[in-house]
Image (cartoon, rainbow, N blue to C red):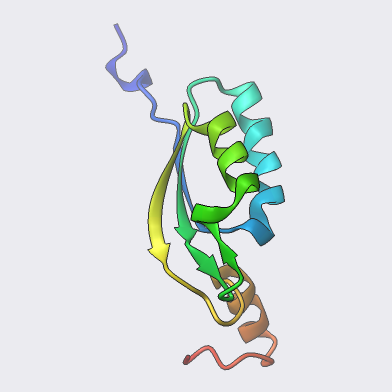
Length: 100
């Protein structure tokens, strides 16, 4: 018996918000291929003070479809600027002050 074949298929991702909800189609594709795949999505509760997740029927519908394999964690209440990944890329170009 090979004890080293055990594998955990869990991924974490930041900046779950309505503006980026469409990007989760890529995780849906992973899930189709790997049925044991799980995701922990760290959410921005109110991105740019405009996207309150708790009041969004779009988010509630999305979560209802994904709740068996997606766990929601708290990332922050708000992001006034660009999300983390975009901020890092722009910082490399010298457009965004990454010290913020």
